[in-house]
Image (tube, rainbow, N blue to C red; front, side, top):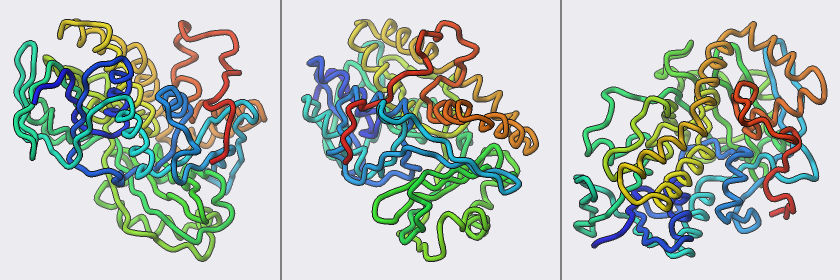
Length: 403
């Protein structure tokens, strides 16, 4: 088989690249070892960044199962303090929750609609690259040759490993733990985040789903106060903490098994290209290093890879354009997140910062928009991004239709 662009991985990053290219008439083939729909361990939250990019790619909320709009977030921190922060109303959508089981399938369907070929249940088994092409062996399909390859194959990227580019013993910057629950209390209709002192700069979340269900979990920084090996032990204790149980209620029950996963967040130091291969999403370690959020970054890097492939012809120029675009979009925010991560590791500082950030209605509303990536992390320190009306930007889907 011979294709113009081969995309390894059909998650958000791979689908975003496929849609970008296929809409412009390029020959695209997506290969994924899984068969969709498939679950992906995740908090299932969509930030404003992810929502705006998803809208541009053609996602329609009303056509995706279990899509849940979020209009308000409640923040909890030390001393029993909590405050509800409303997202703007009447100007679009700024946050949502949707299980990856359905979200990823919807994106892949759009790619197919635009003409991308999708091969499910076919894993990459090897890849070799020359200056102008790549040769792969795909399980069940045999040899596939491509002019360009986009590796969207996750944290453990087989593409990176087969090319000898994997970093020994790398386990990501964050580690997250998730469980679906049913029969949760009515307070879970809102989105909740707990900044527990012993988890900082990590946090606990409860993201609302349909029919009295919720995605509940927590994330911690590798090398932080709690060893990764202790996450399973602390999980039950977290669920019994009064401030968390008060939200979940007295009747909540686990739905399925709990899962845990590493989150790579070092995009500024990870090689983004190798010959005709571009790395996107988790394969590029593109997650936000402050929160571990990665869907918006996956979509963004996938789109940027597609645009580079459309606008440049030669392998070196494609790689250069892609790397420069990623740096322009993510480098400043990544560096700012690293600074904030260190600052917010201290409970007293976090308590003080949250007190200031939630002290007025204006502060609360803009803080939660910043949390949900409506504003870039480093906005205050990147004047090129300052534009009139930056604090009045519309959300995604301004003509909202409730699913």
